[in-house]
Image 1: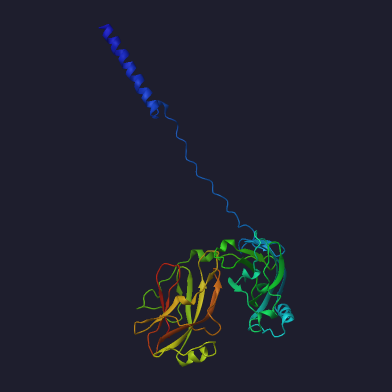
Image 2: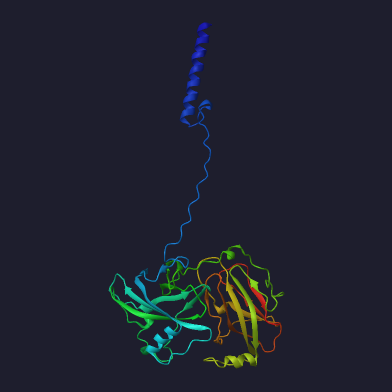
Length: 366
């Protein structure tokens, strides 16, 4: 019996050794060897870095600094505004039209150098040049010489001769801006450059900087005009994710046609139809630091007949709803639409691009 008990004891110890070895091989720790739990540490927040100088409106480079835009090097040489800008324009041609009421000329003289790596010729006129300020509107260049022929404007940058790699030139870019516009910033990009992250910004005034209004980040759309059976009342503001808009005025029939006849290539409406001139106020409210163009083809009309009318191919009288806005910017202007002759119940259909939520309907009748 003692031999049997000893044999059983040896067998039991052997089985226990095999069990412990198996635990170690499987990675399962023995109960008495379990490691102490390490308390989870919360990740430290990353510091928010300001945008690189020259890559945003909130941090433009000073006007003395050269910037790179694609394969171009660009520097501001001079800035003229108001009477001084008009005087430099008259030096090129004495018949420059005075600016519209409340507006003034802004002229920016630029030095441009081609940094292309091949030996091709590239025109500085291919650069996309604009200006913005504290009103959050993007102002495009104007062609002062369009009435008199391009050859009369040799000092405008858009008419500069093509350059090969290493060559440089100088020229003026001309804008119309409101007299009260401040914090002016030059915007430089490549023509047809849809990636706005590649744009560069130069402060034309000391300390000029503009950011997205913080209140835009906490707003929500309203429910006005979501169904054609319940259009937003005349003059009421409709608010979507990206836009606010309201109808300010409506002209139709003969009254609208009288205004349109002053525009080039004006043609009478189709038989059984009449023109509508709709004046709108729009505000861009998407809280992203990029500009957005107002395309008038986002508007149609509908009336009591239930037919949807597309926009006619007609130029609107000034002021036209033709604007490019940064968040917080707003614009007013006319849009040309159409309706059935004498049709009642007319409403504007607003189809905001790249935005969920469907159409909005705004009454065109007071």
